[in-house]
Amino acid sequence: MFTLKDGSEVADKRLARIVQFDEKSRDYPIRATFTLGQRPRSYTWCCSQVLDQGAEGACVGFSMTHELIARPVAVKGIGATEAREIYFAAQCSDPWEGGAYPGASPFYEGTSVLAGVKILKQQGHIGGYKWAFGLNDLVMAVGHKGPAILGVPWYEGMFQPWSCGHIHVTGAKVGGHAILCIGVNVKHQTFTLHNSWGPGWGDNGRCKITWEDMDKLLHEQGEAVIPQGRLKVGG
Image (cartoon, rainbow, N blue to C red):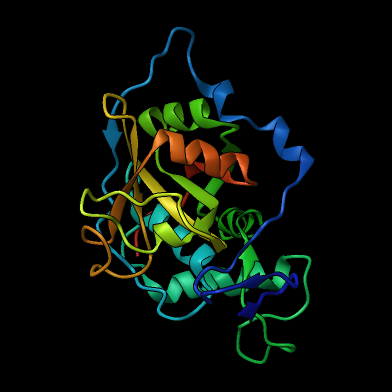
C-alpha cells in the first residue's frame, strides 16, 4: 500500500486522486449553461495524444493536460512535461504538506482535482470552470460543452477493459483516479474515457463505462469539472 498526502492509502501509486470538495463549487453548476429544451446528444471530442504518467501519482496533472490537448479548443505543443508541472503546482497549492516535486519534504504522491483545475485557471489556460452535479449533468456537459475531468473511485475491475472494451465497477476499491471523459453515447448509455496509462492500455488508451457504473462512482465522492473559456492556445 502507498500513503498519499492526505494520509489515505492506495494499492497502486498511480491512483493518487485525493478527495477535496468546496461548498462554493455549488455556485458554479454546468447545468446553468444549458439552453431551455436542450436534449442529450452523442458526441466524442478528439484528443490527439495518449500520455503516460508511468508509475507516478500524477493522474491529476495528466488528466488536466489531456483536457488542454482535446477539442473543442486544442492547445498544441504540450505533453508529459506540462502535465507534471501542473501536478507539482497543484501539490504546492493544495492543503496537505509535502509532495512529489523536486525537493519536496516530506515526499508524498497525490493531489485533488480541485487543486489541479485551479492551476489551469492560474496559468491562464481557462477563464473558469463549472461542475456537473450528477449523471444527467455529465451526459449533457460532455454531449454539448466539452470533455469533463473526472475524479472517481477506482475498483479492481477497472484496471483493464474487458473484451467489450468496458471497465466495470467490480471487486475491491483500490484508490482514486483522475481521468478525462471525452465522449458520451446516448443510445448505448456509455461514456468514453481517455486514460493516462499510455496507448497500450485499453483501446489506444481509451475505454468505455456504462452510465449505471458512472452514476455509482459519482455517488461515491466522485466529481466532474468542465473547464470553460480557453485562453491560451499554441505551443
